[in-house]
Image (cartoon, rainbow, N blue to C red; front, side):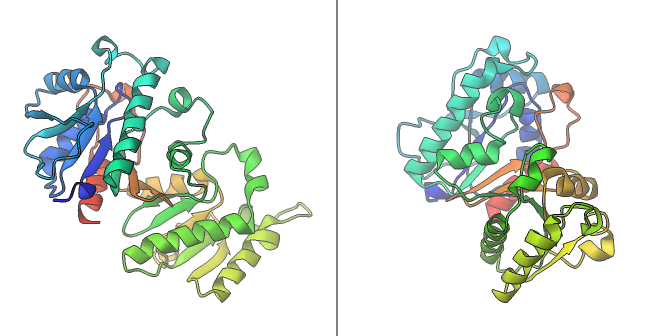
Length: 321
């Protein structure tokens, strides 16, 4: 198999549930495309011992061209050194250099081998990003000099995309523009086109019931005109809809994607509906980047009760994509 078809994975925060769900995933999902994981050998060995998990580890030399004969009979690992004594600490900035090394190495491998499938494990935004980036979508995009991106929380039945990502609510209204709506809709359309689908997109208003007591109503002045322009360009797009009713079953079933104005407006309902049966896809990159739709969940670490479904869905999607 051509190495560009391999699935590259960065484990992310070492003090997380990632390895627990990773072990559960590779035991329960049949994957044709070889998986290569970037992480600490010592950490993964400690985690295997903790969970009583046994599988051969095959070390990969990242300085050499990727072997075109890899398979998933063993765990294909690119080792990044990390002090194993910190492996079961609480989440802090101690792991920042390690996580940064893992991602920067992944970016080099992606560019060198033209990798098209990438999964990033959970990190803690407060400690790793340290307010330099709104989220991992922006962090990864900047490393590939991508200015137009979108966060798509994907489920085959219904996906959502926030126009703004991790902005404080007081800043959301300032960010909303016709141009940004055009960008997100175009990225959504391009993604679904690769799935041979012309998506039916619902756009939400910013204000309750799409009404405002202010003189300037974003729903009437920005969002509705943007939708009308996109309709004329033959996009399958409708709205603006009030956010409090669009997720009722008879309403949401009419659409493939719901584009909201801010993070929790669409992520809260979609996670309530699908729980772990969704994946976070970054649109606009020269490869498909997915992360499981949950965080590191430090409180659940080592308890062996974490749900692996989102990682299973991520790997299965990339295996077929």
